[in-house]
Amino acid sequence: MVSLGPWPLGQDTVSAPTSEVFQLPIEGQQQLPRLTSAVNVDLDRFGWPRRRPGTASCLTGTSFLSAFSGAGLLLLQDGGTINKVTVGAPYTVTALVTGLSAAAAVQYLEWDTNTVFWTNGITGGLITRAGAAQNWGLGVPGALTLGSTTGVLAAGKYRVAATYEDGQKREGGAQDATEVTLAAGKSITVNLTIAETNATYVNLYVSPGPDQEELYWNKRVAVGALPATITNVRVSRRPLRTQHLRGPVFGAGIGKYKGYVLTWRDNVVFRSQALVPHLFSTRNFWQFEHAVVGVSGLESGLYVATLGGLYWVENTGMHEWSRRQIDKKMYTSGSLVISGGLVGKAETAEKIAIFASQEGLVLGLPNGQVVYPTEGRMAINPTGAKVQFLHRMDGDVRQLLMLVG
Image (cartoon, rainbow, N blue to C red):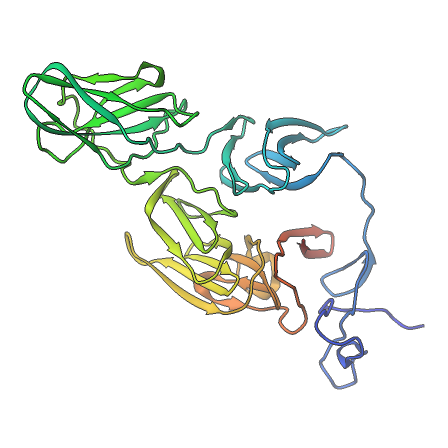
């Protein structure tokens, strides 16, 4: 009888099937044999195989594209619908978001214990712990139409800007102010074409006197009550704080670093304002040489994986960020942040980031240190690939599962 196993190094997809790395260990050598393939079996932490347990169907659908668990929710995308799944006998689903592209997989982010942000690269939104679907951020108002009517304002040039506000009292961004020149004894009339379906109010900001640059809040107008008239320019001292900001850029992925939400599209990573996830800068973003496929934030910084290498980015000051390229490997889409204590090769209890490159697993440790635990044993074709990770613990089985699609 030949003993099968153990194989602590698991499967080798790089070496030729006739390679000596698949042979039984020779006396006096430390080299452990590897597997050419493993079908429907689990390996425990010592490398011994056992047949995987069976599965049972809980739900059926048309075209499942993505799933997510977080903020007390189990979400499942079926075609163009995001469903809330209630576990039970039987499982039940409640449609939360409908009308999405049936070909675009949704990416999710648990922002806090009560909020999940989502994007499919075309549109996006947020879902509350209670299962309410809401908008995520607002558009920026277009050009204002300014005029004059009878009033009491002094003669001179005035500047006016506008922002949208939604039903949750979240305020959006503003463009550059529009100017109007008044003769003495006039008021300012303001009109705007509403192009944001989630806006319920428009906030108007105006300079406090003729030929002044600063903008201060003046009035809040329901979207159906425009045009509005500004008769007094000295109403408040609340400045316009959202100029040159906008709502989120819906990209190919979504992540977070400390108080920032991050999205990415092509070779650009967009960063929200700190602790204000519905406002993104129109001027501050990061560009990389190759397309971005994954971003994972740790306590000390964040990793950015691209089709041409992995980068370490950290905040070196209030508005200063530095980046360092770690390697030039080709990475796949997808990543995971997990406790390093669950991955033996990490040799740390702090959070780590996990990616997949053309040469297999990549562990991003705190402070920009990287480990390649499967280098020389695993090969992945990253072209158009997306990897989903899951850590599984079942008795003596400790697994990091990878689904390559």
